[in-house]
Every structure is written in structure tokens, then in C-alpha cells.
Length: 306
Image (cartoon, rainbow, N blue to C red; front, side, top):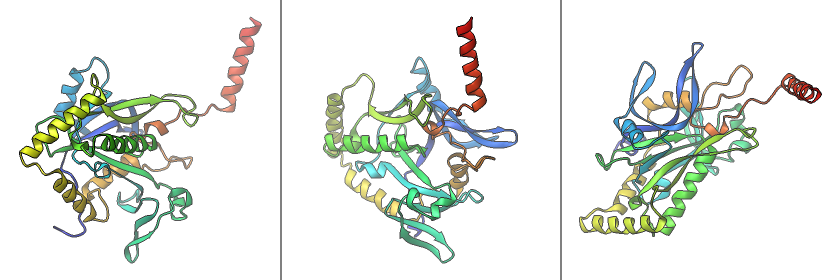
């Protein structure tokens, strides 16, 4: 195994809730309120749709907001890897990746391990661009039982919710996470940060039409069948854990530019970072200006006078 190269789960496609579009000569992230499954091939700056995207859309009457999935590993932290990340926007390369306790940072002396106090308490992160970044690998369909789809996000709500669900399902199933029939679901909420407009995040639950008890029964049955045929889930988890630990940074060099473009965009003219497509809940409605407030008040007063 090549040292310094992270060995990650094989990926056959991407899951996104947005895309990067060209506006006024600039490529900018644009949010969406539904899932899209794509291949890993781009054409004219657009990711080509995966055949499963159309199949799943035909199975629903509206927008694609739920995807049936299984997980590769029993260990929640192998399925979802989250860290604080800072990318060089010019090269697309990761500069610093940490977990809130320790980080791996690129310096003039090479890659060093340093304390990581999280973005709010880190002077190095004050240059901007350091934020939570996660990758979730899931299995969709039965054609390739080791080929996964990857969902990338810098959404705090998505990361927190997915991490909680993974650990909870692992606990209640007796560590049979990889055998549970689950689904990714897109959920909406409103917050003060979004100025009460709708925001979206990704959740994980049992499949529609099923209960947790039924999902647990199905997981035990699948586990027994796999054990009988010699499927070694513990060995698979161990191999994945060793592969992730083999490299300093997870994203491969040919992926970094696309990751930086979508999730770590350049600041706008006002100095604020543009929100990314996957970070939908952080995309707030614009704060009304003083003129907007005065015009609204004048309209209300005019209505009362009438």
C-alpha cells in the first residue's frame, strides 16, 4: 500500500442538493431543495446524471427528497468522516484539517500535527474559510455492493444530524449498522440565522413504510445470511480504518479543485463567503435594508389610511 495515500471507499457516483453554475462569468454554488445523483464525469462544467437518478425520480410523485440506502460499515465514524477543514482556494489543496483536538497542517517544514482549538478559537483559522466538512458514503441499489455514492457537505445541521443518527442506529441494532435498510431524507426548518426562511439539511432514518422494529428484524436476518456465507464485516471495517489512516488528507488530488469550488468558494465583494450548494441551511434570505423597512412601513400606513 502506498504510504501517504488515503485508501477510501470506491465511489461510483455523487449525491448533491445543489450544483455549481456560471453567472456573469463566474462559477458559483447554487442551492436546491431536492437530491440529485450524478456520475463522476463532467461535461461542459456540469456533472452528468447517474442512471439511478431517473429511476428514483420515477418512483416518487414529487421532488426527490428521499433515497433508500445501506451503509458500508458498522462503525459510524467510517461511514461519516467529519473534520474542520481549510482549503487553499487558489490550488484547491487542503491546508489544515482537524477534529477540534489535533490537526494536520501544511507548513514550510511539511505536514505537522498541531493543536486544533476549532475555528472559533484558532488564530490560523481567522484568515477565513475553515469550517466543518464531512463525507458520507452510502450504497444505493444492488448492482455494486462495494461501490458507494458520496455525499459531501459543510452543513452543520446535516453533519450533526447524520452523526447522531448513525451512532443511535448502531447502538439500538447491536452494532449491525451495515445491515439496516435506511434512507437519506431532505428536511426543512427555519432558524433565526435564516431569517425564518426555509432551510434544508440531510437526515437518516428507516425507510418509508417501515418501522424501526421491522428494520431491526431485517438487519438481523441479513446479518445471519452474511455470516452463514462467510461475509466478515469486522474485517471490512478494519480494512477501511487502516485505509483512511494511510494518508494525511482524504480527498484525492483530482477531486480537490471541485471540492474547493463547491464548498469553499471565494469571498464575495463584501468579504463574506458565498454559501455553498450543500450548505443549504446556511443560505439565508437577504437581510432587509433600511429602505425596504421604510417602504414596508409606508405601505402599511397607506393601507390603514385607505
